[in-house]
Image (cartoon, helix red, strand yellow):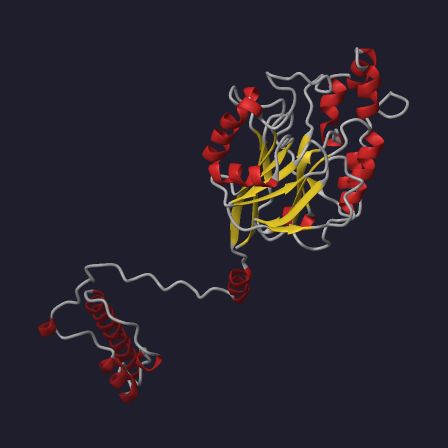
Length: 365
């Protein structure tokens, strides 16, 4: 009997303890409170009494008093965490990033000194806002006359080369330093070079009659290209490029030349000795030689001859004869690669028998 009473008393004690814990949990849920530290967790001591350490920890973790009122939710969301600092790689990349300056150049063979078309050519040049202008066929010009023309067109500096009747010229808004690159006897119309607009700039007008002589001129230019400095060659090169091979094949160029009224002259200028194919040797010497110049080609299919006022039998088909060729250090350097556009519209078609070539390039500022 006494044993049964003891068991019944223990059972009633456990039930009371469970009821006390349940009501205590409800009371705790009515107000949010931080999670108690491990010392305040409920570990019964004897018949439901917590230890002194547990009671002390539990008291310190108790919710705020009723007098203080319930906790209020914040009226605005917490601020976002600050962004992480940049990585060392990004910092190094920013430090090494090259500041570049864009330059704009116009090259034009103006046909026999421009004549009565010179004012129209000047109007187009002034409107373009170019940094540098290079010119072929300054027939009848002198250095003094070119300097006066440059001033009228808004250029403070100029350079002039007389090697044949087909003179070469260069105009620049900023100072240019003429550079003599050895004997130019090999060049039919000369090679005019200067340090201008942040590059070594050369303008030429290659042999218009013989592909073999033109290939020799091309090799002589390659020998004068500085090994590391940014270099840009522009001019009427009187040659065809393998980059335009598809256009030449579509036009059946060799067959057209052989069957035309000027077969001998055109064949000597553009074809191999057999006459069966276009001779790309001059351009190959420039782009495949030791200098490895890069053809800054305009959009595919662009041609610089003929124009609406053409009277040259050598301009018998749509051809690209005017070029810009850049050194690898300029074309693939830290700045944007150069690009070219042939300016072909109703105005430029009436100002020369060549269309002008506009070139944009960038150099370290």
